[in-house]
Every structure is written in structure tokens, then in C-alpha cells.
Image 1 (cartoon, rainbow, N blue to C red):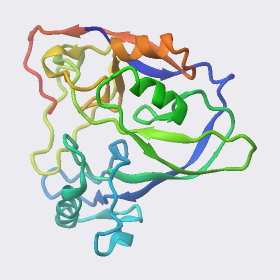
Image 2 (cartoon, helix red, strand yellow):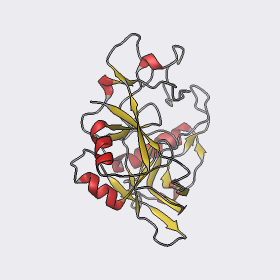
Image 3 (spheres, helix red, strand yellow):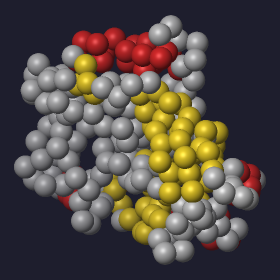
Image 4 (tube, rainbow, N blue to C red):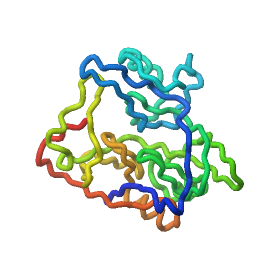
Length: 247
């Protein structure tokens, strides 16, 4: 099986722009007692989560930093609503994408490196291909233009990791309390074949904010002539030249 990064196509042709955020979010951490980091990461998004029935749901609407004990308490409140396979991080985003949108969108719209929007008709075509794990979630985006598209957000579960051989040898290990680690996308990404899923045709990596799809997904998009995205091949490896340190 071959794998690809899902990347935006020619920006001069696809001018679609979204100014918004997800309805709910977990707080970031205000000074971890173990590593002293102040941090949050909003690249973990779970648009299928509905917190409307949670007491004090409005408390999740404001982006902010909290002591780690409060972050951990709020994690336990939302955990029952998460999709199978979801992993939480400080700043994780939940619920529909809310805001304003404008411009020309392709049938696939890879906006941020971790966000993939798709027009409804395109999603229905892909689902008819019997691809695995395609869950389209409604957005709450407002357009000020005629003939605006109906955009859904694909829920990209975090699974699969970069291979240790493409990471810096001095990367270090995540904080044992809050999980923080400084990591950037390597220039030559290499996937760890032993961590890749067999039940998803499009997902995001667990350790990096990168969209990945299978060859099945890429071929289906090309066969159906779905525009808006390009697919960059990513090599995989099963070798273990040195021990992986990213979790």
C-alpha cells in the first residue's frame, strides 16, 4: 500500500478562505508542573462531538489556558462523547466549524495541514467507492456570495506515526505529565509502516499535524475528477535503525 500527503492545489485557482473555529475546545495548559510549558494545540479536531448536553457546555467555548488539573478534569467530561480512536491534547477542538467563508472552493478543500473540508456531492461519490472511515460532519459556515457550496469537515482520526529515522536524533521524549514535546514536520517525511491503520483511508498522523491518505483514496479522487487537492507520495519503512522516541 502506498500513502500520500493531501495538500492544497494551486492557490491562485482556489481562493476559498475560512475565518472561524470549532464550537468547543479544551483549554491549553498554564505552566505544566513537570516541564513548566505553557501550551495548547488546536490541530486535534473532532467535529462529530456534540457537547450540547454537557452541563456548563458554554465553559468550553472560550479559548484559554488553565492549570493542568482543570484541563484533566475537562478531558474526563468530554471523553464519553469522543469518537473511537480519538486522542486528546490541550487545546483540542470539538464540534462543528463555525464562522465565515468566502471564495472559490474545490470539491476537496485542504485548509490547514490538519483540516480537510469536502463538498457534500464529492463526499457522497467517495462513500460510494466503499472507502473506509469517511465521516463527513456538518459545518456552520456563513457565506456572503451566491451559489455557495455545502462544506462538510472530514473527521481525521490521529493514527500512524513518523518513522524515527526521519526525526532529529536529539528529539527527546514527551513530558510524562502533559505530553508536551517540540517537534516540527521533517523535510523528508518517512512513515512508520508498523503504525499505519488498516481501517482508514484518510487520517492524520498521531505525532504530526499532517493529513495522510491511502492510494485507494488518492486514486478514487483522481478517477472521480475531484479537484482542490494534490497528493504527494510519502515513503514508508519497517526498519528500526534506532528506537523511536515520539509517542
